[in-house]
Amino acid sequence: MNDCIFCKIINGDIPSYTVYEDDVVKAFLDISQVTPGHTLMVPKKHVQDIFAYDDELAQAVFARLPKVARAIKASNPNIKGMNILNNNGKVAYQSVFHSHIHLIPRYSADDGFG
Ligand code: 5GP
Ligand code: ZN
Image (cartoon, rainbow, N blue to C red; front, side, top):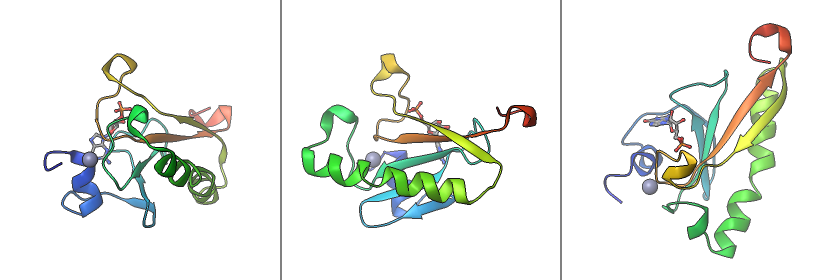
């Protein structure tokens, strides 16, 4: 997948700010931050969307979500919650066709990101 932007990030050909990485996933800051700390978690294996996961990959990737969520939350005491979402297909507003999970920290209502 030479022209996949997230494969390039995984390979280090495009710079990113890494939040978490192991042999299965990489999590890095979204270039366009919905709230501070907005992170994308991606499988290192190129899969287009949720429909392309086999059971083994799904278990490996989604089992890592709580760990990544906790790492983000631990990075800032003002994080009070988190939206986790995953867009699949153009009609669902997927714009990068390497599957990714958004982790969007939520802050208290009075800091502008509540
Ligand atoms: P989608 O709309 O497919 O669910 O989300 C794709 C996300 O990828 C968007 O939030 C967008 O800001 C992010 N994105 C696109 N290109 C890059 C990039 O080169 N680097 C990083 N870190 N994020 C990117
Ligand atoms: Zn890819």
